[in-house]
Image (cartoon, rainbow over all chains, first blue to last red; front, top):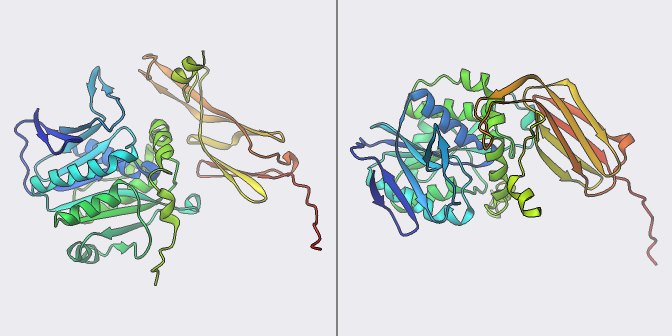
Amino acid sequence: MTSTVMGDEVRIAEKEGVKHKNPIVIEGLPDVGLVGTIAASYIVERMGYKEIGYIESDLFPPVMVVHEGKSKNPLRIYGDEGVVVVLSEVAIPVGAVYPLTEALADWVKEIDSKLVISMTGLPAANRVDIEKPEVFAVGNSEEALNELKDKQMELLEEGFIAGPYAIMLRECSKRKMSAISLLAQCFPVYPDPGAAASVIESLEKFLKLGIDVKELLEKGEEIKLKARDLMRQTALSAPKMQKGVEQDIPIMYR
Amino acid sequence: MGTERRIIRTSWGHDGCLEPLYELEDREDAILVTFDLPRVRKENVEINTTENTVEVMAKMSDAVCWERWGSVQKRICFQAFRKQIRLPEPVDPEKTSASFKNGILRITLPKVRRKVFIPIE
């Protein structure tokens, strides 16, 4: 591993010899409905992306994950030359959100990413009655907004957004980088593979990976069972993450 | 003993039962509890309520097995969900209602409240 130190608090390490060609960076960190996490894991599996790095910090819980006998960092980076996927198998503590997104934004700038896409959920009180979750999008610049309009994405016109994806938009703006968030209607505290499928379908407009979500939907119940503990951890940190504010109406609402 | 319980507390048991994810909402007149019950059919859900608790037992349509499960590192199968929740206020078990759709069980437990009219002097 070649370690790329991106700050005092968060370190991003990449494997030696990894090459990037203006990649699109997809972020799928744990949040409501684990939409991003489920979608990112499915994309990595379907595309056969190799692990190319990891993220570590003393601000994260002192936890490693074991896969096939080998310990790994729970926050890992997968991809190829044109696509990078960032995912986590543990909930992100609220105190780590700013340093993590700052380090990620520094790193995606360094690898000359052309677009950062965060995948996440938008809590819907009536989710149980929604057959196919809709996806809304937010951009961080005129350029990003034009990209969204060009792709005929429905915009999240007004409201508050909270969590790592919200700060990622800001950090990318500060570095003059285009970033968007795709938010699928979801169950707030239950893993939502249906919402993850919707977000992947929207992602196709930007990436053309040709990913079929049929298997994700078919294995939805199994995924829900496997994701219970991460969902529980993530739900516990939601109040500190100010997720409730996403249901509020801004004072400048037109 | 307390510390040990906190460390080994799990959301699953060796009896083949998983603890479901649930959400409790304390509304003005009722307590609303929802449970996420994947692999479960409506006819296999059993709900029992008292004034202070609600208990759900739900059998999965087929067992789910994992070859190397967490800290036990052995094959383990789960075939049901079970959870008892202590309610924050007394409810009327007789007036409890429930619905089940797309794997989500929704239980509405009306609160027991004796309303007293207070005249303003």
